[in-house]
Amino acid sequence: MAKQAMWVPGYVAQVEIPGNTRLRLVNGVPWTDVTGLRVGSGAFFRGAANQSNWFHFAIPTPVITDDRRVRLDRVFVLYNADAGACVDAAHIWDGPNQIRRYDGICHTGNHGGAIDGANNWAGGGGPVFWGIGVSILVRFTSEANIHFTTAGGDFTS
Image 1 (cartoon, one colour):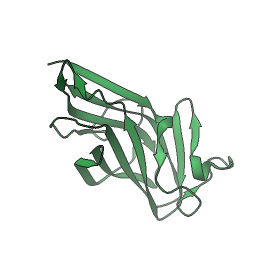
Image 2 (spheres, helix red, strand yellow):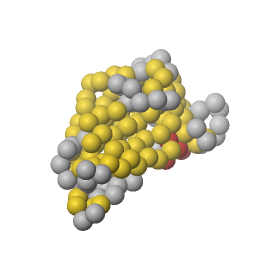
Image 3 (cartoon, rainbow, N blue to C red):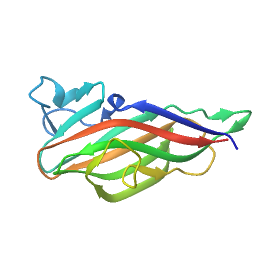
Image 4 (cartoon, rainbow, N blue to C red):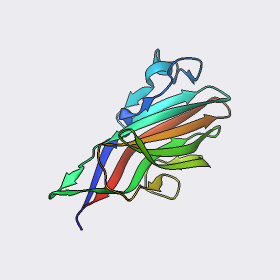
C-alpha cells in the first residue's frame, strides 16, 4: 500500500460565520473579525465570549492513485487555543458526505507545533470519492484567540 500525506498552511482556514457577533478584532487589526489575521505561521481568530464558530479546511485530496481509490487514514488540524477557547468538535467530510464526527472533545492549549492526541482524528476508512474537508467547532467561553498552524491528511491506496 502506498501512503500519501497532503497538507495546507493554517492561513487557509475559513470561518463559517464572520463578523462581530461571533468574532472580535485580533490585536485591533481592522477586518480581522471577518477574515481572521493571516500570517506566515497560520491564521488567528479571536472569538467573542459565550459564542461558537466552525472553521473549515480543504485538504488536497488525491482521490485516485495508481488506478485505485485512496482511503483516508487520518486528518490533522494543528492549533494553539488560548484559555477560554476549546476545540469542541471535528467533522470530516468527503464532498457532501460526512464520513466521521468527533463531538464534545473540548481540547485547549498548544497543539500547533507537533502531532499529538488532541489534534488528529481517524478518517473514514472507506474509499474517497470527492475531496476531503475538515470542520472544527471552537467554543469560546471567554474572549480568546485560536491560532491554526496547519492541516492535513494521510491517505493510502
